[in-house]
Amino acid sequence: ELDKVVDLDNVAFVSVNPALEVEVPVNDIWSLRPYASVGYGTVFKTSEGAWTYWAGMKSRVTLYSGPKSTWHLINQLGYVGYTSGEGKDDSFWPAMAGLEVSHPLGQAPGSGSEWLLHWKLGYTYFGSDIFFSRVPAVSKDISDEWEIGAGIGRRDDRIRIWFLSFDRLGIGYRSSSSGIPSGITFFFRSAFEC
Image (cartoon, rainbow, N blue to C red; front, top):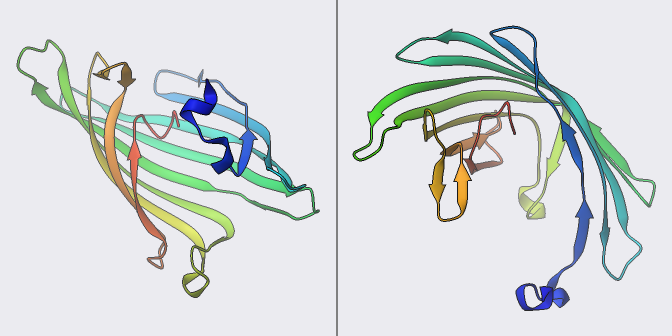
């Protein structure tokens, strides 16, 4: 039945990346989230393949929690890398600091749940340059990234669309300090949980 959904002649590669993460509450306002993943990907009809791996720690500190808003400081330190079958490898050490704020918007008509406005601002330093290339003429190395975004959610419930369920629905803008590359992102939960 898979061949009716996906044309396997158009699939160029496949990868499997199992991951493990767990939330560890340190106290009433501070939680840690260690995570790790290792996987392998291969290009069909060739001998090309690569191991990918990442690990790290996220932290969330509640700076303020009141009736009008909640402020969280989100931090992350990680390691990301790959090793190809041809002996090529690369890695970087992303370090992120961000602020997430939730503010009540009131109750929606016919709903017993309060709507929240979620906004976030974050900065990530990669530890070494990352090379982006879509077209050789506009290839760029970047060493950092800024993100700003906003979304909506519900205080005591999830947003349900058909059979899907989301903590929040948000849109953001990302850009390096040099301005290239930049792009639009969509987010469905807190950066602490992604």
